[in-house]
Image 1 (cartoon, rainbow, N blue to C red):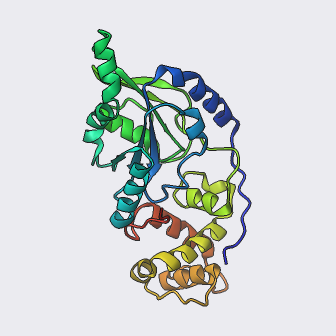
Image 2: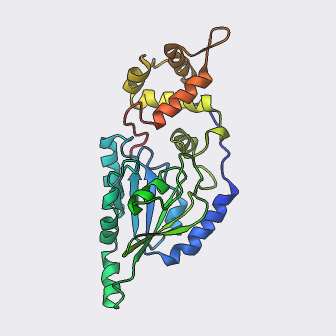
Image 3: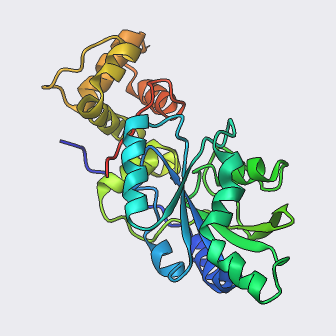
Length: 285
C-alpha cells in the first residue's frame, strides 16, 4: 500500500504560459508534444488536447534510452491508433532526432501541397513544441537545431518565455515553457512525475516518494532491485522497510546505528533517473 502524499505544485507562471500558448496556437501548422517514454500517460498534459484542437499532432517519446523497448513499442502502437504521428528520441545522444524534420513534413504533407497550390511553397512550416517541465524539450530543440538555441537545464521550469527557432529554411519551431496542469487526477500521476524529476523534489517528502518507488519497482521489475542493491525484495515488506534494507546493504548508517533513509532515498531517486537501475517503464498503455 502506497503512503499518501500531499503534492502542492502549480506555480503561477504556468497559468501565464498556458495563456501564451493558447494565443500563439493560430500561428502554427502543427503541435509536437514531448513526453517521457518511461511515463507516457503521466507526462502528457491533459490540457494540450483542448489547446491544440484541430491541429495535426505529433507525440515525441523522449528518453527512450531509459525506458523498456518492449513497452515503448506498445505505446507507439497505442498513439498511432489514436491518429497521432510518433517519433522516438533520446535527446541527450541525439538518437532519433535527425528524423524530426522529415516526420514533420510527412505529418503536414497535405498542408505543404495546399501552400504550393496557392503559390506559397516557400513559406516555412511552423510547429509549436510543447511538454511538461524537464522532459528534455530544450535539449531536443538544441539537437534538432544543431546549436544552443534553447536554454536547457536538468531541472524543471527553466524555459519561461516563447522563442522562435529556425531549423532550416522550411521549418521553424516555437519553443514554449513547460506547463503542468492545475490538479493531478491521482496520487499515481503526481508520484510518476516526481520519480522522473518533472516536479521538484522539495515540494514533497523524499523518503515517502522513494519508499513508494521501491514498491513500484518490486511490482514491475524486482530484478532491478536485486541487481543494484543486492537483495531480493520481500513481498511482505512495506516501502520504508525496502528502503531500510537498501540502506543496510549500502552501509548507510547514522548515529545510534539507525539506517540513513534520507540518504538512501536520494540515491534511489538519483540512480533511477540516471538509468542505473536499467531501462524501466513505469506505465503500460
